[in-house]
Image (cartoon, rainbow, N blue to C red):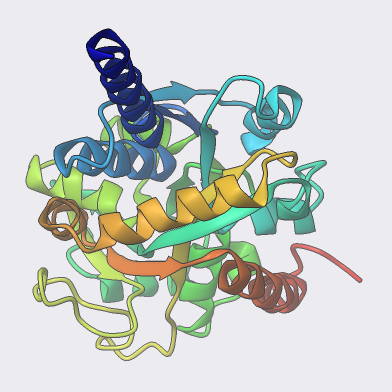
Length: 321
């Protein structure tokens, strides 16, 4: 009887250990762009906070650039759930690039899981740039729209281009005349600015903040709807007198064949993460606003944004009916 009892205790302990390991199994984050861009920053920051908060023992990351994110999406669809827990980070460009025909996929080909943050657009110049303010940039563009070359980590007609075009449009300048230079991911766009290939960088605020802290750039304006508590020195387009704002969600998608139970597990973990001090530290460091929405609400956001962006892109001539 004693041997049987010990055996039962051992079996129960082993089962509990397995449950614990499964509940904290590793998540592999797929990043549809190169190092240094907004997707890369977001995935790694989320993974860092998950491990530090104890929600995960380990996270791993894989950068797959190319095709405007299309290679990574194809990889996720092909892999399905065969390779374990895999989530792909993405943001507004998955909607934009599908609308413009740059992607053969849309968010509907994947399983939306949750959005986690809102990031803002930022316009930065090199630290030694002659342009001291956003007003200086606008005046130069009014004189000759070809004067300023604008870098972005995405193709023409996608987010970095659209945000910059909307910003100059708010100043009464035809956004279609903007001289936009596309780079493959944010890291290369930053390098283009620092090397002097371009005069202005249109990027996400978190990427611009890293460069500002390093003393490489000055941020001339951001697209937040109101000044940020953590960075009150950064002027918004609205405080500068231009009626323009832009918020870029970033969130996570799973393979199309993932179970609803697994989606709920992912979503619950993200929701718990948002309440941790480890997440708050990451959020403040990157100038993000927490924007957690679970699957159903996330899908509603995607559908509404798709219509809004279609209207804006048609107005700027990026797409046609």
